[in-house]
Length: 103
Image (cartoon, rainbow, N blue to C red; front, side, top):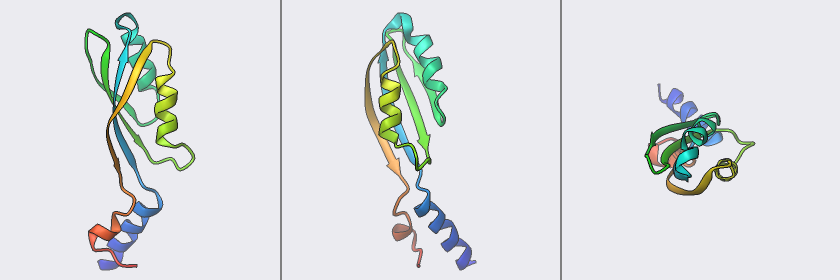
């Protein structure tokens, strides 16, 4: 049983998951269109859109070939987006040292 948990912990270290919460501001008349485009990104989910064009988006990314900041930058360049602000970030890298895992 202990060996199984070590394998799981090693997988987390080799493939860490990034989770980000980003606040996007879009022109109100473009907000629905922007939200659709943001939701098309792998791992992205639009949670809330206000009448003024603000929206909360979470991004979950485990792709080593694509950096989270590149994804956010690409999203920020969608026509109709005014600004973006990273409001939360979590990364699983190094989790083993806090989980009691041994190598």
